[in-house]
Length: 512
Image (cartoon, rainbow, N blue to C red):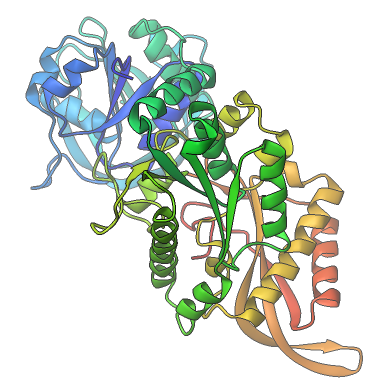
């Protein structure tokens, strides 16, 4: 979109993309740009408001991130969050100092005055604090509109200049009414309209795909997961059949019986599918590899090699389509700001120079929950849309250590049992993601009268909305007990099952 009602400037917070997601949920379109974006580029978007994200740095650091000073002269409403608040305070002449201790966790926000940005928000609402610096003295013209027990200036505003600042993070799930606050800023302060939805996004993307591709051919890698299936559906609606080649690479790292399920699913969708059996190739390249980053790189590079080889069989094949999401981008490398790299993703970062075709990534700017809505908009079946997320490198990153036939068998069989039990209990649709991890750690057990020294499987289930943050799922003990009993009894080579109760952050959802 050329017009962007709300511009979000990224200062490195891991939650920057969540601000965009929350606003889009309210029907307000927004995009994230690096803090260093030029004033000329921002003006081209004709924004009605600007949000300054949080970030890990201090405004007093030697390498502190600074805005283009001309942004302050645009006369647009501005909302600063955490680091953004410190920038606002510093620019307008207030004082920011290092806090005596970092404030991290839940706090109760009390109102010091009436403000449109808190319209219909409960006094005493829970918000999430995460900061090292704090405002000591407000700039002239500002007033405190909200405070907490440890933050007398939890929210400040200059209503004449329409500049607002929060010490807390309204975008995260822990801020109970944070979505309303962002919505109030966009609609009450910036006077934005709710015009953003997946129907309009689909029409726009289909038009963009037609324009980008022209009369050439697209190679679309599919796995049967939600992301690649939605990409394939988008392309099939934008292009005639002869311009779309969907390729399914069976790399041997899929869940039990998944290869056949993928092929059957594309028959139902009436989309032509080329299947390539590359199981031996992938396992051969992964032999002896234990480092998770090397696994990801090997798998990603091998996928690219296979697609390039397949492309040469199709006249005019010029593009490779991928299901890259916002979360893939932010966790791999911040292409739009200084966010910290968490881990690489096999489908992020562009193509090697020797490739002869360009990328098509129609989902790159949307989140997983938006992808699901888009899939329904495109007419995909609900059982496909409701599938749990599955990593691009597949089971390779759910096996600690070397990937081989024995390890794949153990993780596939244990995962299949867990999926069956979750669906039977009705909990499959209640959790965001669930899977088993083979730890490749042996421990002593007793089966019958015999001593065993077998492997351990970890069950991982999380509740989340977008994958950026997650908490472990509080699944009933009887369900977990059934999963554990069946895995140990039915999968030879496993004698112990553990449950992962880590949240994200500090842990990631996947183990590798």
